Length: 321
Image 1 (cartoon, helix red, strand yellow):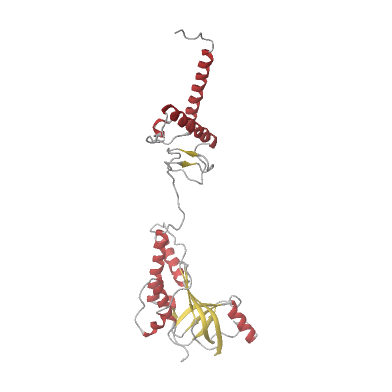
Image 2 (cartoon, one colour):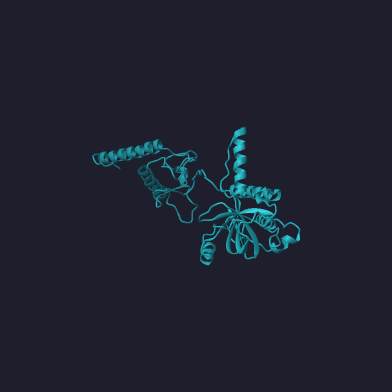
């Protein structure tokens, strides 16, 4: 039929080439798509909006009620299609009947439509090389290809020929080898981009070595020590109870103040290496709860001995010259 022509395949090839940043194939049918660009920035769904008057045939209704899904053809190629709400409302207002009633085989003139290319968001990974699982993977991949291309018709007119047979000998769009090759390349590219950008669950580990901030109390800070083990996760409970950390934190401050008083630190003198004389000794090993409790007990014992010594000094006679 003169009103129909081979234009769906070149459009889809041009759109896929644009998604892959490839040069368009050579041929006059691709010239009109040189400036074709997606209207969305979503990597998983690319939408190309076209305002172009073209003729199509509704060869099959996949659903008979809203939302209407159909198969359309240009007499050379078939592709899945749906109709926007505005397009359906305009049809019902004009013809006073449901869109799918008696319109199979009809010719429509399309004025505005979207070509939607959908990439799978998740690819199943980690399968063994069993034959059954390989067959399942192939089936899933074929399903992704079959569902990757859709046209959404946004403005159209019914031209007639309702009930006609299918014109020409169209083949399914996703059965064309060049289209399948471009889709596979697009899926592979999208998968690589997802891996490069860290899409998916991330098992984070933290090694905090300097100026450690306790997540449960942002105003408490430990000085230059490894506060958590390498496997510590902010979603888990801290390995040391908070009250122990606070006591240790206060003890560190007291220790630093006493050290500075003893050494009479000058502002112009080199910075004091606090970690070299901290009570826990080696800073290479992460401290544990038992270490802190034993250290706190030791400090408490030293303070008690020091107090008893001061009390005994009150009963001693003064030193003679």
